[in-house]
Length: 149
Image (cartoon, rainbow, N blue to C red; front, top):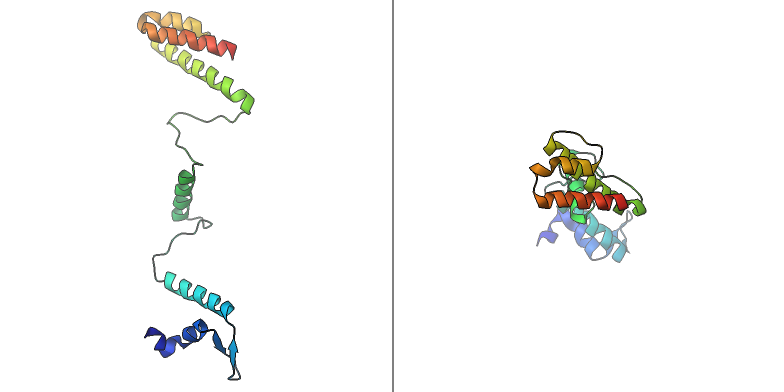
């Protein structure tokens, strides 16, 4: 048995709840010593396996672990390239989305027509011969919703 080895007699004694004092008498520590010994044995066993970066350590591996944990828990979501998030109050968020959609449509129509316009409606009319009727109507609807927001 591995516990019969003289090198692990302290483990055998600890698991049985018995400890030796410096004067040769036996002391019974029971569960407290068992818990401590099991913890020490677990640390000893774990030290033989691959080391894993700790989250509080600022290493590349730890940063990767933190990133994966954030993705798994839903705290990190990828953004499209060329886009940004804007932090605003809850009351402003919905109207801001509507206006941002209209502004994106405005920029797209200005690029299609090749000229800049101050108003979305003017950009839509300038790009009308170059876009489909559905896109023109979508631009007009976006302009209408942004005006109300």
